Length: 279
Image (cartoon, rainbow, N blue to C red; front, side):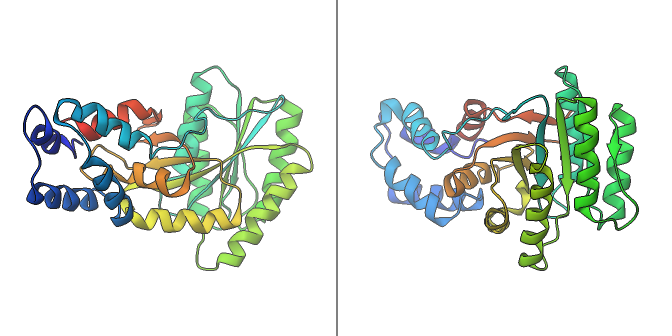
């Protein structure tokens, strides 16, 4: 990414940044999807940086914008239930499959629930992934009620004593009240038998500030505990991860960086900040 590379070079040693440098940095930060408010905050704090500690100081300033909450997956009892939410097109269903593969590779048993029943393609996609990675997928009839699929999946999860039940939910945003009602109903069905360990929201990193807007809508519908950011491929717009955590104080737990089933990785703040600060 290296958004700050040139700027650090100007500050290092005996050099100082002039007004044009600050304007250039402001333009670069906004272009990198940090947004105007966070950009202004970072620049105001950065103006106190001394040349001999530019890298360390800027690392600290940026790190303070990241959430301090745990990035580990919450687990509860024999079976941990993870509900995955997000707008259609963000890579939500694929992220569910990638997370399932990640957990399986760590030695956990996993069950999948295809509760995005309003999109037949989503159900087919998850079933295809399930066969490919060797994980059972619970699905209902076409256009079945999501809650009924979830009920069957929870029943099977308890019967099989699986370590994780991952639930792919519908991502319609055309009617916010419908979204809230649907997600609330799914959660109630789960919690009659098992606690919900995590609600992970999938955000498409390439959508920039619009991703934060989407996130706020889901936050009104359900208690989001963590984020999966997809399509964050190391481009110059990688600042969106920092902007999201600063705005929402919800920890990013995984990054989706490609199309392969293995292209899902735990979010590591130190590596991320290093990418922003260095070429």
